[in-house]
Amino acid sequence: MTTPTSPADLPAEPATAEPLATFAQCHVGIVSELEQLDQLPALLDPALRARQIAARVLAFFPEAVITHHREEEAELFTAVLASAEPGPEHEQVRAVVDQLVHEHRQIEAAWAKLEPELKAIAKGHDSHLPAGELGGLLTTLVNDYRGHAHFEEMYFLPLSQSILGRNGNHMAALGLALHTRHALADPASLGPFHV
Image (tube, rainbow, N blue to C red):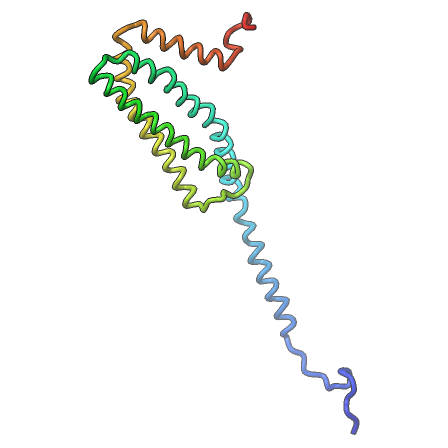
């Protein structure tokens, strides 16, 4: 009797369905992955909205919020402090102005942390922060600004009206200062005679 010298000389093993099962398993994995495509259309609108919101706030915040802070500090706060009566009224105004300026700096510091994250989102990239941390920072910014605006509108602006309203020239001077600041920021608003 001769011994087999090559695999072809070995007796054939019975065929099994194992190779076919491997192909079937591949199909299960492929179908599972492809089924996620059904979720894609529902995710496109929120992703686009996130990019749009981030881009809009990136354009808005420096021009509106930070400019507003500078204007309040340079014009309104200064005018009210200058017009407040010496003594308790001036001390009260000084304390409120100091609080509002401190809140401005806090809001701007929060913005400085968020700005790079919003730039990434606006470009369609992921934030570098975990979603929970990013959400917490955004919520804090919105809530802090909401509280700041409420305090200013309910307390400081009426106080300012009372103080500046005692002398019409003070209110007129504030109006002129604001108009001049806006006109210098937008030369077109000065009309055709601006050189």
